[in-house]
Structure formats: structure tokens, C-alpha cells
Amino acid sequence: MDGLATDRLASPSNGSGGSPMSIRTRQSAVFATLAASVLLLVSAAAQEQGGQVREFSVTGDHYAFSPASIPVNRNDLVKVTFTAKDMPHSFTIDGPYRISKRSNAGQSVTFEFRADQPGNFTIYCALSQDPKCSDMKGTLQVR
Ligand SMILES: [Cu+2]
Image (cartoon, rainbow, N blue to C red):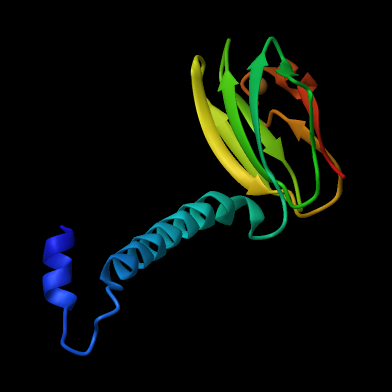
């Protein structure tokens, strides 16, 4: 490899033997570019608006959300996997978030949103197949 590069880079005016150095420099540049790309990919989603990625697994079962409160910081990217256990339920938050995700019994739905509005917001089940579903309440807390 050295021989090949030396042959290619050798010239009458270049007697300093600097070609191995330039190979190393090129490799460093490639590595730095790759590292920078990976860093960008990892941080782009979380950092683009200054928040962190927060993941929650929430179940709807026996007319209750668990956990019942979802505490996040403003501008976090909130990823929720909502699983309805015993019957269909929805994970619904009214404005300003306007989220309503329905899951069938034994299934999950995953979604994400940016918590860009501070305050406490009620999470409820908007399905009407069972009147007790209106008892399902949780809270999204955005500080
Ligand atoms: Cu329900």
C-alpha cells in the first residue's frame, strides 16, 4: 500500500518523503467526517429544538392509564407506546396537542410529539363503547 501510494505521489521535485503522512492525514479526515456524521444523526432529533428524547410505555387497562402521569420538560420529544390491554382504548389529549391514538385490545400504537406547550394536560380515553372509559384519566405534565 505504501509502495503504491509512494509510486503515485512521487515526483522529482518532492524529496521530502511526505507521502505516508498525507495518507494518514487523509484517513484522519475521513474518520473525522464519519464521526461527525454519526454525531449529527444521533443528536439531530433530540437537539434540533433543545429538548431530550423521552420514551414512555403507557397501558390502558381496567379503565386506567398506567403510568397516569407523564412528566416531561418543555421541548422534549416525547415517544409514547400505548398498549390497550383489556379492550380498545384511546390515548387522547385535547388542544394544543390534539393527540388521539386508538389501540385495539392486546395491541399497541406508537407515536411521538414535541412537548412545546407548558402546562398540565388531561389524557383521557375518548372511546364510547363502555361508559366507564370516561373514568380513564391521566396527565401530561410539561414543565
Ligand atoms: Cu377506553
